[in-house]
Image 1 (cartoon, helix red, strand yellow):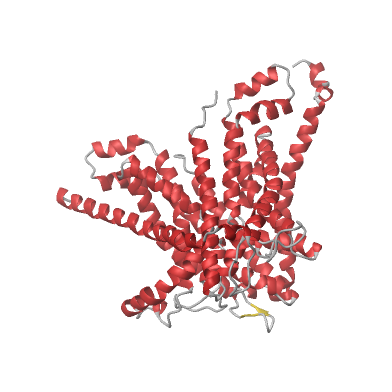
Image 2 (cartoon, one colour):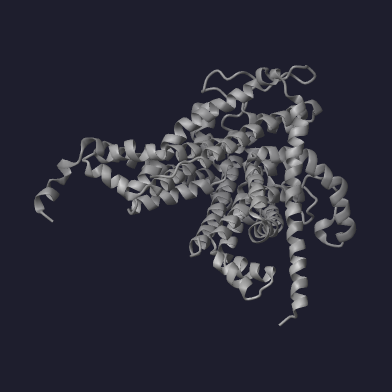
Length: 311
Length: 280
């Protein structure tokens, strides 16, 4: 390259370009700064609790604002159990629906159903919560929970009085809410798979189910798993519907009928009324744990999806 | 190897299971839609849009303040979130292969995975505590943080779809880079950017958790962005957990309006996208 122009390039930069570059760089830096500020705030705000309780915070099951004793085990337990119920119900359902629509159903039905599910994904969580309080919870109390306890009452999960609201209700509403997201992810995966897999499998004489195993489930395995984990990430952080349905009691109980509390719901319930500064710090530390958990889960999902060559 | 009969039997069983799964997942969805319409629509009246909430027992309660409050919050959030998201998206394409760009991309991804309640906490500590009271501004800020990653990502995706020769043609004509970006590239994707904005607005209009301790709520008309402000989702939440049957009815009507608003934004977006002209 000729030396001259390069040496003078700095001067040749258009003034507007320089301003433009500064401007968009500033905007982008601010975005990173915002994220760092968020992380810093969570660590700093929760520090009094981190200092006072140490690792006990995560394992102690006693959460008592009056005595200023804070152990996050009940809320962590509540989050994990409600999300686990949600995933166990939503994952098989949404994968089956996606499989059915892409491998069996005609395109028209697929379009109608996909539209329907997309609309569901758009419904705000407070509306799900409202439906949960007035439709789902009464139904659970009067029909589902008595039935479960009659037939599966020997299991510790299905014992105790029927409240309607509780861990089971929260898990179910989460399942309903994450079905659209897992379905959307699976649809995207199935759409991106080559049709030749399907045709080859059928041409070799596979039944339709065998074709689905070969050309859809096996070929799209990573994408499906990634989609399920993304759904899990959504379930972990979901606040409003769960707060309205979980019953809000800071205790660990094996029974799924009994009320519980999740990390998000304890913040929503107690933060505005937290009296002591250590209570505030404990709630922020709960937020920090939730933050780390969702980020890890989402990162894991992205790594799995990205390592998939099909997408 | 199983016999053909066995394989066909399994095949049939699986098909029945799959159809069953479709029905089971469709049921709650149908139930939600039906309940919102059946319980929400009867409460609709003109007064519902123009009135203020009344004490229990008095007729003529409305959600006018919550509806207008939601629009104020959406306005503040879009005013901050949309330009910021656009700028971040442009940065990621202009400096595509730099380490900075992947840093920004990574931050946006992380930001979008943070639970919204945590963002509410953050804004409470940083803004509400410093201003000493809840405010519409704080609520709008919290919502804008949720918007940024969505807008940034879609801006980046759309800009990358533009063929490189268009940018090169502009530069070859001697235009400065900022003019190429602002006057040639951005107008080319304006339609898709609009749709992603509409989707982002639809998404945050139902957000409740970040507003709990930022915008808080109010029983009056919005007056200033430095005061607490009512919003539709928060109002629905408060009415729903109240013990009064009358308020529950109002919650359903509020939910009907909110769902209708969000869904029509979504459907409008689909219609716009369907008639999108191909990039030339």
